[in-house]
Length: 225
Image (cartoon, rainbow, N blue to C red; front, side, top):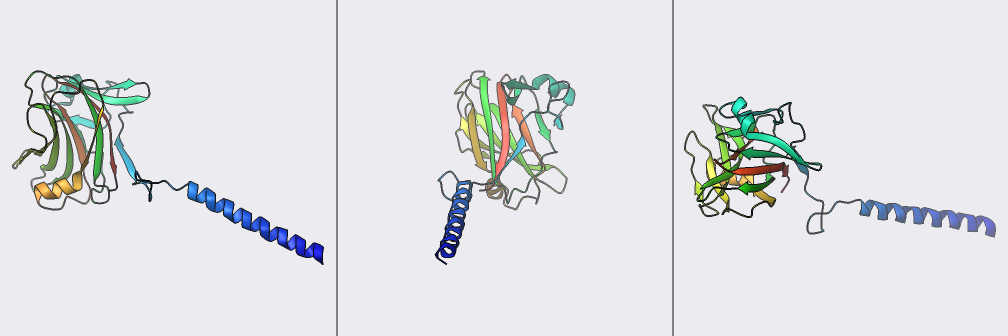
């Protein structure tokens, strides 16, 4: 009888230990946010420039004026395993309609960029466009996040009917040669600037380097708030 009770006791102890181990492993597998509490926001990479075409131009992208001349100004380069789009001597923006996402569930837009050369007194250095809607004429309703050499950070300009609204998020001609990561709440900015909700699905991203500027655009991603 004592042997049977001992055996039952050992089985219960084993089950208890197993439950505790599973609990610890499960707790260890939780991904925490930046503050160490709660799950990290869901991140989606929209473009990492890992898929160039035969001309080193990103697949699925177009030029706002001409794809032929866009390929002369924009090309994909690599540093180790990291790919990026270089813009040099561009006179137009490049864009893709192949990128879609729900800006309400994933409002945060992040990207990296790096400047190599900027002419003196350059106003427009580079920009990233969040294309979140179309108007009744099917013209993009966009927010243009600008790196300006002369305008003050936080400056906002209404784009009117045919141009994107502009928000200066970085000012000055430096630092040179250093990657800088930007983060914006594209959904909230859209509502604040355009005074209405964006479309249920954003339809694309545009990038632009300024005249005489050499700039690299790194990976572009979105996340939950």
